[in-house]
Length: 402
Ligand code: ASP
Ligand code: MG
Image 1 (cartoon, helix red, strand yellow):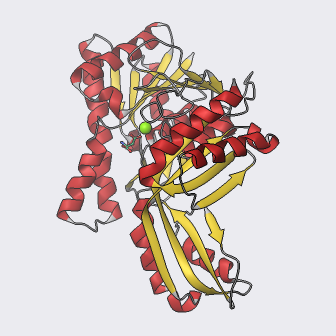
Image 2 (image 1 turned 135 degrees about the vertical axis):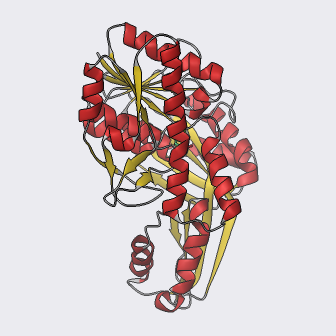
Image 3 (image 1 turned 180 degrees about the vertical axis):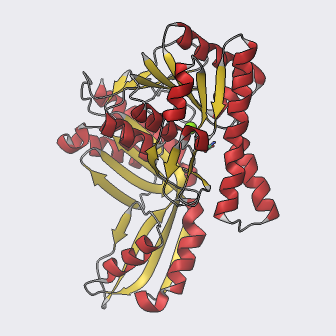
């Protein structure tokens, strides 16, 4: 078999864990498999590097920040390769240039566009275990760009597609995908199998386990994904399309990386929303939940959410465009959080919405925004109530599922 394995930062945080991961890699290699490994930076390395950069310059150039962040993964691949050598096996580390991973030019949030796996294949032919840096790629200016936080999952799936691998194993510090984050919701249960679409919703809603772009890619190229612990041998969660029974509810996701911006007093006429989103899209600001108030006295208000790291930038852009957008004033709140329920049953079973809102009501929590789709319901509430709300909703909904 051809296997791509990916180890996250928590599975590489110290020397002992590096050797533990090295052993898993060697086991796969010894079972007569071709093995390519993608690594994240160790432990909190990426956070620490960002902090150091911001201390020196609070408004860092995105290009230089990428140069710095990419070093985290470079350290990991070299150390891992040394560990594998020490255990008596041949391995070689490759950075994104050597591995032939190319992306578009967006610094800090690039998308992989092409992989030329020739060098990787040559090394595999030489019976090397190949250890590749995750999270980074080369752009058309020959600069290193990073793929957004958590992006090494996407590196792994993209490589699995390019190499036509049989499976992509994502090793992490939990046993698989859960119906909720077990650190927040103790009653969360492990999911054995889940299909791409439901997993995509969970990932994009901040269920934190995987980079959502990696699931999109896995779906597009039909890559079998297994999320499992690097610390034990339990089978983990299979993400794929085969034999995955549809369940009513897959999980409850919490996202604290949310801020809401409201534009007050927009004129109540056709085209205002278009103008607003034209400005946001031109500046590559991704928005999530949106609500528009009903008009009164020829004005209306629009609120939408962005990831917190884009709050300052978004406010800046909106202020610069105040004349063009003709709003009266702007308010924002970065003490909110989003709670979502995901599952194929959302559209077909009105009981789910009722149980969700009942859980919130029983806790006496006020809802600020709501959005729904075929397979999810998301609400925005105060950040300091999110844990209570998530537990109430999860416990209420688990009853329906079973
Ligand atoms: N090291 C990067 C991060 O912390 C990429 C990753 O871990 O996937 O976001
Ligand atoms: Mg990760």
